[in-house]
Image 1 (spheres, rainbow, N blue to C red):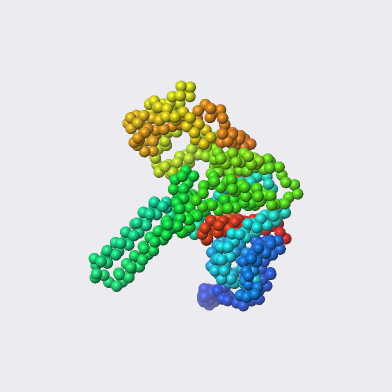
Image 2 (cartoon, rainbow, N blue to C red):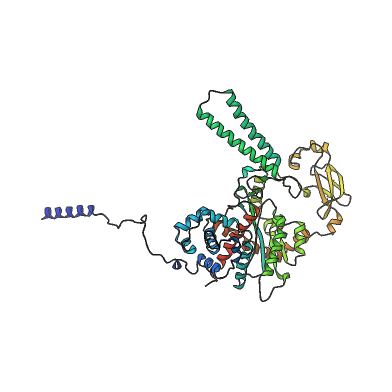
Length: 531
């Protein structure tokens, strides 16, 4: 019996080892014909529902009728409501390319439901977006009116900021006119070398000849492109009258430095309300500094506020307006002082004056790291605070103890007057502190430094008044609200929604696309308010 039981147990374990799991087959890659009710795909509470509801029920799209005169002949056009839905929904999903939106209309059930199974060609979508420059402003205002009726605009504080976004242009084709002329000459020399090579080597094979001819044609074409651009455009100049770089592919775009490197793009400026982060003004700028965008942006904000209907308009003096140091200038501060708004605009020394950072070793360490990165390891240069100035005797000595001579007593810079001193050339050339005092070895003059004269100290500028205002406890508390008001808006647009590049070229077209990006953000804010 023992032997028999052992055989049975061995047989039982062998059966257990041979048992395998039995699963149903995976048919996820298989196509299937099923009935679809498009109306059931747009679920309340979603972005696509809010988008469809607003376009169908609230927006006036009659201005698009002027695009088409095909009532007596020609093919029927896609309704502008359909085109708006698929474009804005595509933007909300990071599909900024017309080809990707057109492909989604054939493969994605949500796009099919929004368009009613219309499948426009990508050229039709691209043409629609490129011609939105006249239609986007009224649509943007209509959506703002809906936001205002729903109580999403508080009018307590407005914040302005900019977001640098890549354009549809290569930064390799940027440069001043002088740089572009040198590049053109370099391309033509390279083309000439290929030609001379063929003259000196008649035994080249057909493959090498075809390759060289193709390369020469490419170089000639690029050089001719630069020639046509230089002949058709005038050189741009900056605020100080110096030439600035132009781009051949998109002349309105500009080279911009960001935290992730240098890009060729536009600066998307936006002003939003702090209550629900609704964007009230949006405009894209190319080769224009942020300081120059404040006045036109604020003027557009006032125009938008006048269009919005409210039961009781708030007192303008109670509305706060915040901006970072990129918008700080004497002209902007004077403009905002006369605007009627309670403005808070920082200068680039705002953090250093903060009592919380005075004894912070971490802050000083991080600031020094940033400075070394910007200056590529060069030592910190002496500032005017390191020089020994006596306003009574109007004399000045440098950090090395050498006496300096007064080169000007009423030197004007902006709205203020300075006393300027200059070091003697013979002293600066042999000074042991030269590397810490001057960027380059002196050639024709020594180190210059200037100080406010007594009259300018008595006469406060708008910058001085703003420093006093924003350094106060109330000023710092009000300005601290700016970060939570405007920064999440750009994070939502560029990161969450993936709208981080422009597909069009030219100031007007890019500006319309930027406003469409901001329109997507505002419609998303209405998602939970519409039923």
